[in-house]
Length: 255
Image 1 (spheres, rainbow, N blue to C red):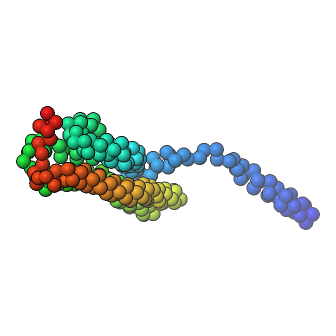
Image 2: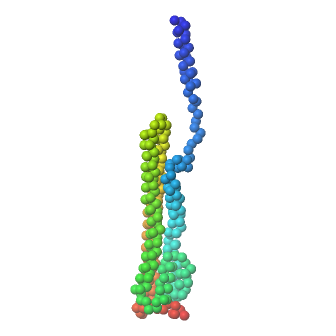
C-alpha cells in the first residue's frame, strides 16, 4: 500500500510538468497583415475597386482646379469687357476674349463673331447666340461632375459583387469535407465578403459627397455666367437699342 501510494503521488506531481512540456510556448505573432495583403486576399473584384478609387481621387483634384469661379467668370475680364463695351472698342474686346480662357470670354467671342459675320442681325438673334453658348457651357459643367455620381453608384455594386463571391466561398467551405480546415476557409470567405463591402462603401460614399459639393458649385458658376452674359447684353442693348433695332457692323465701325 505504501509503495502504491508513493507511485500515485509521483504521478500526480509529474502530471503538471508533463502537461507544461506538451503545451507549446506562446510565441507572439510578429507577422501582421498589411492593408495591401488584406486587399489582395479580398478577391479579384478589388482590382476595379482600386482603379475606381484612383480615378475618383484624380477627378476630385481636377475639379478643384477647374470648377472654380476664375475658370468661368473672372472679375478682371469683366472689368475689361465693361470698359471696352462702354468705349465701343469691339476689336479690343475681341482680342481680349481670344486671349482669355474663361467661359464668359467664349460667350462674348461668339457674340462678336456672329455680329461680324451677320451685320444685319438684331438683338434677339444675338441673345439666342449667347443663350446657346451659355447652355453648352452649363451642360459641359454638369456632364463633368456626373462622373463622380457614376462612381458613387458603381463602387457599392462592385463591393456587393465581391460580397457575393465571398459568401459563395464560405458556403463552399461548409459543404466540403476538409475537417477543421473548413473553418479556416469559412472565415476567409466571410473576411473577403466584408472587405469588399467596406471597400465599395468607402469609395462610393465620398464620391457621392464630392458630387453633391461640385454640383452645387457648378450651379453657382452657371448662375454667375448667366448674370455676366446678361450684363454684356444689357450694355449692347443700351448702346444700340435706342437708335436702331439692328446691331451695328462691329468691325467696320472700328475701321
